[in-house]
Amino acid sequence: MKKIYTYLLGGAMMLSACHDLNLNPLSSGSTGNWYSTENEVEMAVNELYKYEFWPEDGQQQGDWSDDYICRSTLTDFDNGTLNGQNAWVTGLWNGQYQAIARANNVIDKAHRAIDNGASAEVINRLIAEAKFHRAAAYAKLIIKFGDLPLVLKDVSTEEALTMGRTDKAIVLKQIYQDFDDAICVLPTSYSELQRATKGAALALKARVALIMEDWTVAAASAKAVMDLGIYSLHPDFRSLFLSTTKTSSEFIFKVPRDASYDIYYGTNNGGVNAVYNELPRNPGGWMQICPSWELLAAFTCTDGKLIDESPLFDPHNPFANRDPRLSETIVPFGSSWLGYEYNPHPEALECFNYNTGTMVYNKDTRANQQYASFNQLIWKKGIDETWLQNGFKVSQDIIYCRYAEVLLTYAEAKIEMNQIDQSVLDALNSVRARAYGVDKSQTTLYPAFTSTDQNTLRHQLRVERRMELAKEHMRYTDIIRWKLAEKVMSRKTYGMPYPASDCIDNVVATGDWFWAFTPDVDEDGCADFSRLEAAGKCQALATRSWNDRQYLWPIPTTEILTNGNLKPNNPGY
Image (cartoon, rainbow, N blue to C red; front, side):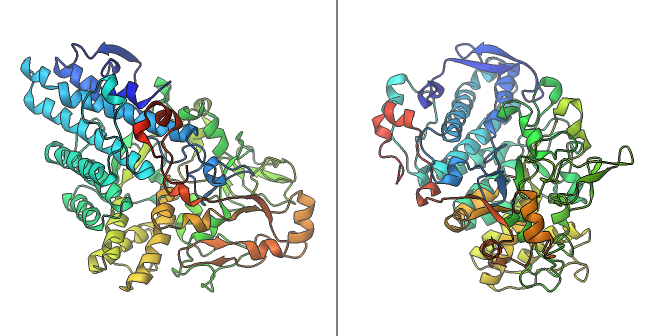
């Protein structure tokens, strides 16, 4: 069994035989005499960039939030049944402790290379990279598990079996120290390779501080990224996320994928299935993972108001007069998408094929295909025609951290401290103005943030994060720290009545497509469709069931059984 103790021991370690961050096949090296040359230390550090060590929340299953649905099925998190045997629980724990063990080896043993004449400057930079990775791994762990074993060196089997959990405040202090050590040494950029930089360490420090509600550190770290003066927002929101965009001044830290080395989008989910799950059926996908109705409702109108407050919103045409990021995140009805007209209407039995210029059988309406999108919505963000090429193997890097997030982190931390000044409004307006394709100074061309009231701006910030960061696997940590999970993860998921004849009779025939009327939306942008359901204008697909214990994850059962010092488990498990 894979346990923390295996990973904490030295032993044999897989090491990359390349210099492009683990995209080539691996070769093995023994820790007994390894780390004796600069090349060996660099190979060991390269291994820490393995995409397995950088999982995104709910990767390939949605993001454990109200932004996604998976047809009528629910995950353990959605069901409130998360436990110590869950694959994501054990996988995160095992994978991050494996990364920690490898980072510890570099930090402890890289001095051997200096003793053998290697450049101290280069080796110290590689040690700083290892500390960056160790800090990032511990950050992922304390966010989910709270108190946990803090291991900063190789330990024996006997030591490992007696280790207990360290208070998360102490772990957080070590995370900050590792990031600070990395910040002092790492360069601001590299001429070629994508590696951890000073900006990446600052940005991830800001992220973990924000999630742990350490507002002072979050604001200061985010501001330090801004003050570097090397990052800026990509001019075009749509193109930023495409697989063809490999470089941008907005990227702060990315994890590379390359299909030529058989590392591609969806590899972690048993192959290319993840790509099929996000593609509509007309061009060959399965359309299983869909954006939720709640996400569709969350985007503001072009006047900056929520849909139940704005006179611009038309429930029969929900994509009209909306923040431009909506139509770049979710495919608008009737638009051209991947060579076909996307039309999920129950009477649209045919759709236009832009490749042939002919009308064809429409696989994206449930009137024809039962497993077309269950809620009529499909993803657009980050997807383009390249997803249909190369056998659906997509060389799409993981954009782990980007500058827009840093601006929103800075704004949120300052808002929570009630230190709202022009710099806060500038950060928010920079992000929103980019969505509208204008400069933040052109306040007549987009709905600028103007309020300095803490409560008002807090809720506006939450909506802005949701619009900007949708499909980037960050909604989970947002609803956890904002304590919204108990509300939004206790609601049903929705789609149109099925079979299609019911939709035609109950919705279309009465002139009520798409939504019969505007759903209720609270100040955080969270929609409630219960009135639509009661009126027979939609159908519940599944019912989520929240359990407050899931604000923390359980320590994996195998770890508890092996080491009694890890008890008690987190409350409720």
